[in-house]
Length: 83
Image 1 (tube, rainbow, N blue to C red):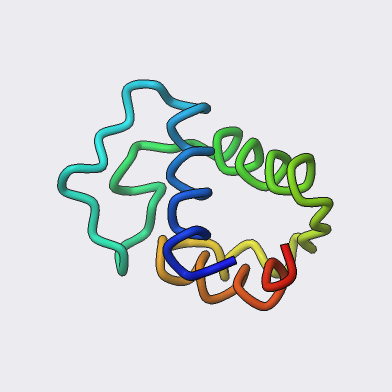
Image 2: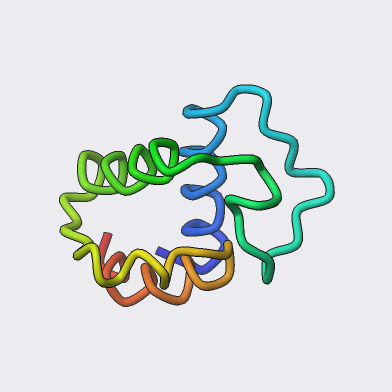
């Protein structure tokens, strides 16, 4: 899976969780929770959807690595490289 594919997967999952999410001014280096007004349950929904779609087990200790769009891509790229 390419970097842009992973980026799109994350955005698609967020759009599924919050159909009012506005990505037009999204800064890929700033925390997603702050920019998109995601709460902790929304964040867990993202993690659970990654588990469901790609069978990924993301340890709670790694959740901070999913804070920004760029950090999500960086973290997920090795995990999704053969998908």
